[in-house]
Image (cartoon, rainbow, N blue to C red; front, side, top):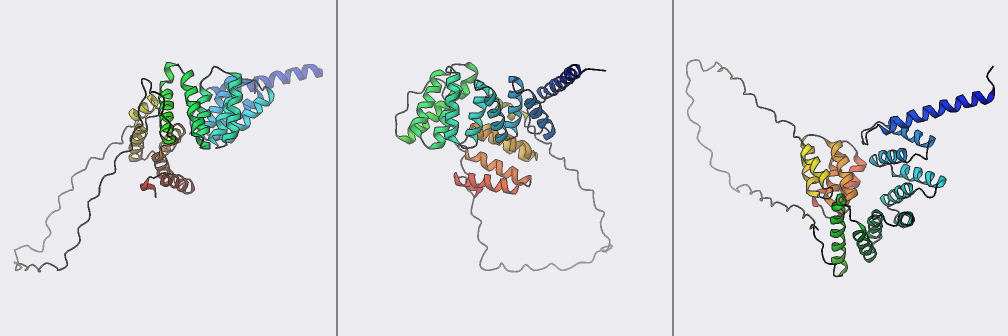
Length: 326
């Protein structure tokens, strides 16, 4: 007969092995919006069983962010911080989720808490600047962008530096403040494509033209027979466009809205509306002032039958001045 301590130890080892297997399976999953819900929930359960694993937390949060489940990101971040207030990764995830939900005051407090844990990290200052922009505090946003530019020196983050410089200069122009001298490598915002003029449709003539005289009917031998009908020539169907090159351009520079514009047109011709929705959400996350992103998102949602979401997206595009969405 097995005594209780041995049985308890065996059960503990069994549960530990199951949790470890679930965590391993979760970490092998790709970060994709097309992942089945059951797989994501498997990661959530694995994280609940082992909340101290930083790699498991990061991967689960990435999956939830890709699906747009910001409320779940907030809940899991708070749960981890409740166990360990010094977990800076959970603090940053909490700040990001709050900002994306439009809760700017709470997000600012979370970002400030992260800066106390990692004072040398430049990343939170970009988020702080976006929070101040959301609050309408232009001067504070400019100062936060300056703080970010003064700290960010990583070569792989040059795209983010250009983005910060562009937004800082735009805010300075609106606020009537002379912007700091533009640093090397800064890029100007990409203008929206010009609208093409549409030629007016001519009005029909007021008087009808004189009726043409019908030629006399001539009866030919065999006129009642129908001539043989030649088979219609086969028309080659256009091949589906390959948008992979445009996806690579987006990955190379996530702030180039023109690449997103070309991708949306390409994917719409191929009927890839799910891909448009996924890419436009990423584009609007990194370029919140790009109004045409809401237009493309709304059209794709409309094609997928997501009527309520499409109406909300098109309304935002219309309010931002995109006449095609109105």
